[in-house]
Amino acid sequence: MPIIDAHSHVQFPAYDADRDVVLARAREANVKMIAVGTQYATSKAAVDFAHAHPDEVWAAVGFHPNHLAEQWHHDLKEQSSAAPEQFDREAFLRLAADPKVVAIGECGLDYYRMEGEDVVAVKKAQREVFKEQIAIAEAVGKPLMVHCRPSKGTDDAYEDLISIIHDSKFTIPCIIHFYVGGPEITKRLVAASCSFTFGGVITFARNYDASIALIPLDRILLETDCPYVAPQSQRGKRNEPAFIRETAEALAKIKDISAEEFLRQAHKNTREIFKI
Image (cartoon, rainbow, N blue to C red; front, top):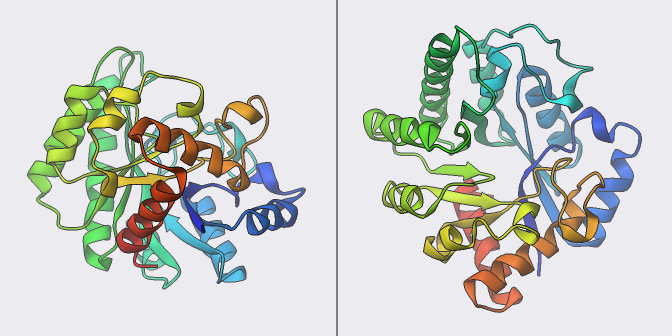
């Protein structure tokens, strides 16, 4: 059964030494992927990677909320500095129009490590840039790939996401990647027509089982979020698309169906949402 990794970062510097080998392992495992950008440099790299491998890779282009502050993903240091980065709407709009781009993201809200006097201003900036990317997604008719991480012990970012969904009244699909919300917020996001991706964490943590049980099967997609959070059998290693089947088997168990049935539905969901 073919699998599409709906959220990967194989274009990141973490794979510079062996990207072709990683792609070959994915091919052997019958896994294709969407390469997801987090700023302009990695979004452009995702598009280039997708064009270089047109039968196996698609791209998503977006601006991660953490790049508005003095934060960065550790795998991006070669392409990003600790200084805040400006969101260039026109540059992203041009990238978004590329036929290999199937989604806008990852974009959204991240309140997890905020502290200091600028919290209110940073949250406001995140919301504004997120809304600009919603407008881009609407303009090009492609779904949103949303990063949403609340501050510890709260649902604050999810609450703001729901408010933005309702206020924006957008019509394109919204996929919340690496979802970690509890049952009550899950019910509200399901009611808001969101879909969800889950990664390797569900193979070793039971925190999310109750939420997964509430989500209709036609709203669940598979992801690795590689190079981050490898599944249980690969813990401590760099993650990659070839490892995704273990996550699928864990999700199938939670949903009390066979792995093959789950994989068929997840593949159908991904093809329909991203039109691939």
